[in-house]
Length: 405
Ligand SMILES: *Cc1c(COP(=O)(O)O)cnc(C)c1O
Image 1: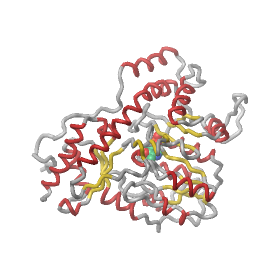
Image 2: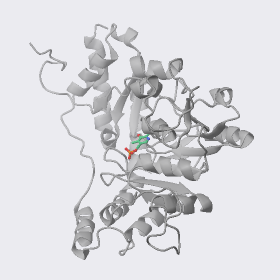
Image 3: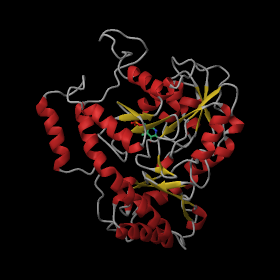
Image 4: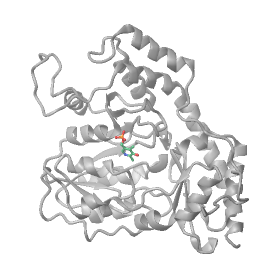
């Protein structure tokens, strides 16, 4: 017999669904207009790609933006345009989406994993310097879940060691650190518009930067190595066709008009849910107060302690939470360096030096987050009402009481 996961053995406590993406006729109209124009792609005849890039750059307070097919390619373009050379080392966190590290391999560089902070799950600046060698060239901090990294400390280390900083802002559209938009603080900031992200057109990506040389290089790389004022079949660099369509650009401009209010709503709901869970032993929301003036809550993450839940595994807890109707997930099963790709060094044609070995890497905080602790509530649920937040907290308390305490 199938195990009954809901508390009362029947109905979910949270009955509402939380739609994502959010759209209305205004989104449908802009797409229809592109369809009717017959100008669907490159060149940017309708000017919608450049229009969106200008809007997003201005929104971030950056000079330039380069759109591209996805967030992974955005990171790849930024890293290559930053001037890395084969064999250079790039510092990345182990608790992130795989692309943060694989784009480093794809640039023939070496990802070096530095552990995260236990209370924010962001790259731990106090552990960065110990990982720096004469080969280190860049740091890719990830504003995980939409919470700002400790950028003052990271930028200071980067200046001291002459390193490039590329902010992986795939969770962080519209988020802020000390009043500055995330992505606009380092040498470049990379965004994803994949379906689950806080700003989406189904797929897509973008890099913001103030660096004109990086901008020109990324512009060329996403456009098959072409250069400004060059001929169509004249190619100067190893690029590819990484361009987005007019449909994506039109939809992104329309969706961007909602981003700030959605972000503020999630931020408020996150702060509220933190207060609701304050007294629940065994549930610790990640702490705020590290400079994030606006948290995007792409994920609302709390740390689960099974010892306060009669030993119930994190997997079981997260399944029960989901069965009650809370959109949630147990997150990454393991830190990136434990993936077969790294353990077996399945680097295929990429020229990673022989000395590289991930079998001895240990990042205990990331490991604990993966195996024991991290539970994610998904961003669309954070667009709910205060009443929804109360229900989420109530479900968590009910599961706890059912677990025997
Ligand atoms: C989604 C994501 C990416 C990659 O974005 P895609 O558009 O899926 O290629 C990179 N980094 C992080 C942290 C992400 O969550």
